[in-house]
Length: 227
Ligand SMILES: *Cc1c(COP(=O)(O)O)cnc(C)c1O
Image (cartoon, rainbow, N blue to C red; front, side):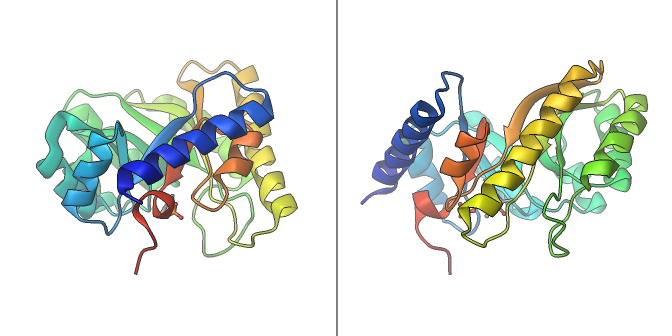
């Protein structure tokens, strides 16, 4: 199968999951291009991809210089503060805002170029130590603090489920993020627009859609297994 075939297959599965969930709203697919060649990225853009994601800022910068305005750029992995200035101009959405020091740096760099930077708050629901992100409780405090940062707009939440393969466990984590999103929506903060729920990767995006994800981040199901 070509990248185009696999990309289309993922789109079909997204539609099937939406039907199963009784949903008619849009689910946005982010093609995660980490470790793949520029040729493969070009193929996925030609197949219709409008957004690509990288988990390392250095790699995102390389894609930006290669593909310019052909596609949107999503930062989905841990972002070191000293890398923010390299991506700030062209990054569409930072999915991985996970600490105050990073928020401060994004605020300063965005202000310097007069851009309001859309970000998602990364939440570590499972409490796994290997995963970064705010705890459910920390998010509630952080949204209050970030009100003082006019160059950041929170556009939603992101999480990663454990790689357990256990449907019940994975879905309960996605459900908790969905409930947190609803809870924050009901507070009607002006600096927050709870539009996106970024959850679901190759092995669990169907579960994520059943639990309300409207942004899924898919790599290996499109490009094949990484080394
Ligand atoms: C790699 C990665 C993905 C995509 O993973 P696949 O299993 O290849 O679909 C999604 N989100 C993040 C944060 C990643 O690092």
